[in-house]
Image (cartoon, rainbow, N blue to C red; front, top):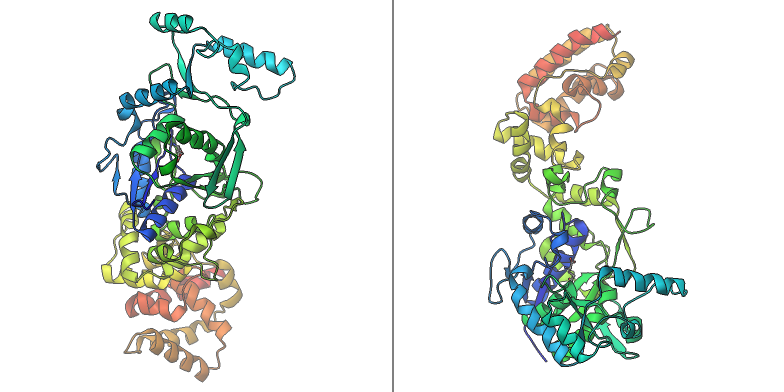
Length: 507
Ligand code: GLU
């Protein structure tokens, strides 16, 4: 059946969404854009005990920063509103009851103590992973094991109950995963998951399936951690008689630690000095890539590569290029290793693609915060020159502070090695020569200085490090003549004069 393509990103607001969650959102987004469909943002907040205020806004803002946009959702509404499951609460009971009527679900009255006792009993009998399933259900307090009258009496009495799925014995549950191919389970391995809780809320399993059905979702793209839940979901579709419109599934590979030993964890960010989150969230002690000076273009580029590859050598992609190249066939099954160095490399590449003016826009708020003022035109030229040397936006300033104020410290080592008092006069003449260059641009400064060096038999190694330290204080930085061009004649000459006075102190 050909249906309009509809995907959803369905996070639970249980804390700050880290980059793994945003990768899921991104893959959904790329697929929708590629095939022309609609993307929904649904908030799955049925577990009130894990609810964290602010988490919903955080995920919305994180997606917005990455350029992941939605067609329907909690923040924008749409034809299937509300999109927040807690606001859809009253609707799910009917579906749980439908399954009871069809004989696919049942009431269970077991107390936490009784459940605990069952687990302990089974462990003692040598079962390491006891479950509430087609065998155990016969011995528990539920509407399958109890008489009809007793069940009625308990319900009338207001005894708390949950509704559990009645997983059949020995049925094959098979579905086609867009990444993994055919996946099959035997229903005997599956437990009788709770569908509806005693607090009147559905569980994730029921709400997820019902909403995907009602919202006419055609593809479920989510992390591998949900693969074990998929057979229960497939069974639920079957029980409702919705198999015809069951979405296709794609379970994305895990994101692994840089060493490849296990799943990337929240703490790994601190370990590598690389935030695993999109945005700062002060109250939760979370630092974000945005505030670190990471570009959203680079973010989606490197997230796309965490599990997918284009099958060519191309690594740097714009959003449009990602949309064009993206496909499920090229998503791997095995875990994708997160590499902070590679992530930085992506940022460098995208910074280099930006103009001085675009970078100046991004650097300006950072300078404002530091109280540093710079002429716009000058700032653009500095950014243009520094972009080859910056990994994050603030590096445009941090690695080139000499562009924004006087030099406070000089590289003494270089001065001691290279400076000789006899050079004083030669240098004064060189400065005068530099001052006489009328068209003060990189090529004419370069040829002017080099001519002077040739006439006076001076080697590069004798002059260039000293010029560099005089102009920047440090040995690192952009090419010396380009630096002079941006600094301008007055400042350059003034710095050279100041330096040769100071150089003598370091002998
Ligand atoms: N609410 C689930 C989560 O937090 C969604 C899983 C799914 O997409 O089905 O990731």
